[in-house]
Every structure is written in C-alpha cells, then in structure tokens.
Image (tube, rainbow, N blue to C red):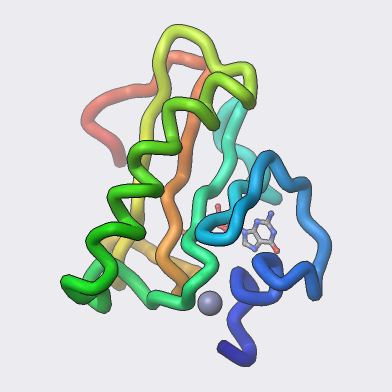
Length: 113
Ligand code: 5GP
Ligand code: ZN
C-alpha cells in the first residue's frame, strides 16, 4: 500500500529496529516507546484495522497472536506484558495499518487512559 508507513517498514523501504520477521509478520521497536520495552507486531499484508479484517485473515491473525509470547521473551520482557491494538478514532489509531503494541518491563496501570 503506497503511503503507508508500516508497509514501508515491512518492505524495508524505511529503517526500523527489527526484533523479528518472517514471511507473514514483522515486529519492530516503537519509535516513541511508552515502556522500557515497547514493540509493534504487524502483518506484512496491509490491513487497515480490525474493522477491515475478513474471515480470510483468521489464520494470519491467529499466527500473530501465537507468536507474541515468544517475541515478548525475545525482547527481554519479564513479569508480564500488555498487548494493545488501537482501532479507529476514539482509540487514537494514528497509523492505519493493523498493529499490536506489546509493552513490558514496568507495571502497567488499569484501566488505561
Ligand atoms: P497507534 O497510535 O496507531 O496505535 O500507534 C502507532 C505507533 O507507531 C506509535 O506508538 C508510534 O510511536 C509508532 N510509530 C509511528 N511511526 C513510526 C516509525 O516510523 N517507526 C517506528 N518504529 N514506530 C513508529
Ligand atoms: Zn500498510
């Protein structure tokens, strides 16, 4: 998808600090970390948000969820982490390519802001 910053990261057209990648997903550290460890996991396929997923994406999304625990350990997270996906305006989604924030290595307040 032209003009999508996360597609550009997935295609290595702009640099990022990559934690892990394979043919289906890429995980990279957030440019503006909100916790000692804060990385993003995105499908390489351009999907705008959870509102745009189709039944065809079920395997891909399941794959991403199954990978997150392994990636959290690889990033050095201990004692738990939070997975967040901001979708749409009220959630302040700023990048319109589906992504999962993974935050860890500090206590995370609940409820979120
Ligand atoms: P959202 O607000 O859409 O849930 O999250 C977008 C996230 O992407 C933000 O946490 C922001 O810091 C991060 N981000 C935006 N542009 C870039 C970039 O070019 N590189 C990296 N590594 N993170 C980015
Ligand atoms: Zn994209």
